[in-house]
Image: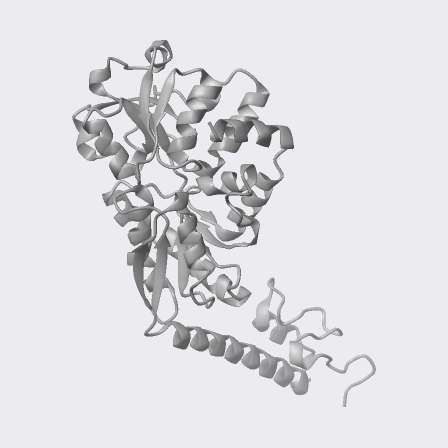
Amino acid sequence: MYGPGRRPREIGFCRFRTLPVQVGDSRLGWLGALRRAPQGDGTWRRAILLCCLLLASGNAAHADDAASFFAGKTLRIIVGLPPGGSADAYARLVQRHLPAHLPGAPSILVQNVPGAGGMKSVAYLETLPADGTALATLSSGLLTEAITAPGHVTTDFRRQNWIGNVSEDARVCYVWHTTGVSNWQDFLARKQVVFSASAPGTAGYVDAAMLRDLFGVHLRQINGYPGSAEMRLAVEKGEVDGSCGGWTAMPDNWLSEYKINVIVRLSPTLVPGMDNSVPFAGDLVKSERERAIFDFLVAPEKLGRLFMASERVPADRVAMLRRAFDAMVADPAFRQDAGKIRLTVTPMSGAKVTREIGALYATPPDVVAKAKTIAAE
């Protein structure tokens, strides 16, 4: 018999209002609940144990459902840029390691869908099943373009399901060794520097425009290159003096044979192999307002190598993908593989990415207006 106030309540939810501890209490767990149940009251103990078994079986069933869903399936990673660049390299790194952390160990296919500065990949993602079997990685420059030019980039990236970020995009601006430009002072003194760039809104395009507008570099852009591989080839062939790009995409022989002079860093992070005497552009601005504009324009580089799922994917499937992603980027095998191909790993969780993008959309209008002017030049 239960005395007054002793009757267990809400058994289905494993909550016992008359006990000083709940089964779901993270401090004690179910063993603590059993130990603190009234002595000699076998019914209490049986009720708690039964509830815990039900919870365990529910969790196991959920894991079994996830494994059965992914088992035998092929996931797709849609890359919004051509093969040969850093975005493609990170996608293929994730392709090799994410299956080991997903229930059912599905296979993964990488599919490059370049075009419209990366927007083709976003549009294509929305045509695929909204069940968690399709992810996309794209030029993070689209995030700021969606704010500065919402008529061109109509996607509201706050609504997307962000799975995580493998690494910030540690970008640098450089010139070919035959230009006679070896440092920032030489760069500013040059009457004209010609840089390669891609489409408006892409990181390389914005980087070059920012050098010209914020820092006064006499820079002319040649636009229209499909991707970073083609831009590097243009540098080698002498079509242009230099470009801005991801540090991890620099060919090994360019660095080992001193074929380029790195002029400025666009990220405060010094990655292995980078000369610490190369200045960080954020330290070269002349005012707080210019720094705010700079921070807005380089925000995509901080957010870096993003992976997202459609906004239509159910929350429980998104949570599962996020758990697998977080486990992958912490896996020593993943980090070792990344190191072998000179890819940095400075991860950010999907939840943090979501918060950072929300903050980006809250940028003051005057800063956005100036950034828009720079990015549209």
